[in-house]
Amino acid sequence: MPTEGGRMVPDAMAGPGGDAVPGPTLNRLLSVMGAGALELCVAPRGLEVVVEGVTVLDPLDRGPARGQVLLAVGVDPRSAAAVDAVREAAGSGAVAVVFGQGGSGPLPGALRAAAEDGGTALLLRTAWCGWTELVGALRAGLVLSGSPADPAVSAVPPGDLNGLADAVAVLVGGAVTIEDLESRVLAYSSTKEEVDELRRLTILGRRVPEWRVSAMREAGFFRALWGSGDVIHRPAHGDNPERLVVAVRAGGEVLGSIWVAAAGGDLPPHAFDTLRSAARVAATHLLHHRSHRSHARLAEDAARALLDGRGSAAVLTERTGIPARGHCAVLAVRTGASGRAEETAKLCALLAVRCGAYDVTPVVLPVDRGALVLLGALHQDVRRAGEQVARTGAALVRQVADTFGPDARIGLGTVVETLADLPGSRRSADLALRALLSPGEHRTVAFASEVAETIALNQMLDTLTGTGTETGTEPAPDTPVARLLAYDAGHGGGTMVRTLRAYLDHFGHVPDTARALGVHANSLRHRIGRLTEVSGLDLGSPDARLLAQLQLRLLEREGGQD
Image (tube, rainbow, N blue to C red; front, top):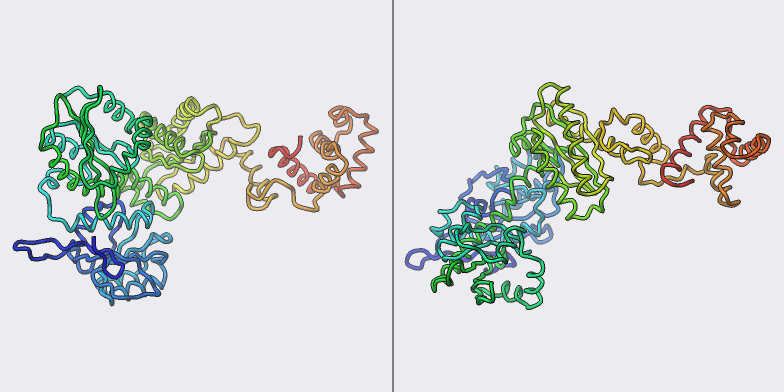
């Protein structure tokens, strides 16, 4: 694709008689890319405006931008700078401006008004699609949307990769798989012929076996495939039949590959030409798939935004079908495993599948070392809804423990009346989960109300240590307990801290404390006198005793003292 002034410019299409016809329109570009990467907000001149290229908005280099889609990287759409950017883009002839999501809430009226007045379309990049990924998708989309329509495209809906695989299989007379750049299977054709073992393993595992990928990588096959613009032929070998493979690309972007395996005979002579044509058709479908990803990903994005307090219940309803009004709740899940990406993906898949068996509508979100599960469409009676949540949580924690180990825990969020109230349910689920993870707690699943005492203790301990557990577990400097810790560190043995803990645990009863420590009562009285002298602790003050008790509990819970 040629460039002009550093901008990406699609080739002009050739019309009848060799005349150049206008390039791709905004409507065609958005259709090819799918709905997952860009969200259209305003299109004052409609969508049939011609797009000549894509460029990044640079405040220090405001050159002509006629026909360009400008990417406003780093500009908050809710700022005054965004309004200025739209006005200047309109003045320079840009057809559209793309902003990141920025903060929460609706876009300012001034921004929409600037777009309407200037005749410039306004779009938002979806939260999960990064700028780098978006640039690649737009580059490919410009090429594909500027290409003449292929009859095969209209035969298969955009993004229907299984339909495309079946159509290609009929045309080439073989078994087809469509793969991404990581050799994961995106789609495969159905066939009545008996398939070879490699194809069977690939389809069952939804990816090419790792041993096969490693062998092809070492042989330099992938370098040849991604660098080639043509079909590569792999002759039959042993039980493996003849295969053809071609890279699918657009605008310099490699999107994936199409594999054809002979089934029940040799591949026909026309298979090479057919596969070349199929790769051009497949580019549109793969770009649509990559940009759109999946409905589940869009639902996840809407749910995450809502739980973070920056999203819309209406958007979540639109993407999941969960009614905006109706009982719902959140579960906070922790496995106790390492939290690696593959483990988190496995956890989310398990939760999504298992929730389907308990008459609830779930949305599962991966989080650090675990997952959040949004349960919607619960029973209309709040008591019955609570029972649903409890049953689901109890069943899930057993299944998670069977897969990931006995440290699995699930905090149950309170049942709320609307999707808009879910942030509150999420907070209670997080509190319950933290309580379940506290030392000495043996339950694996609970509502916040069932572990209220532990939650209250956690909150008090957080206050003592600052704003939360991230600040550390050492007591504030110059408190009596801090002085005792320093004294024990200099004299060894931890005698003073152990004595104070035992004394407070036995409510100041000297005989019981002496027996617990294994010392004579008179020795204990002498030690307590020394303890108060060193620490300055007023054992007659209820507030001083409470503070010391909480600080000692904090040290005990975090392993600071034996």
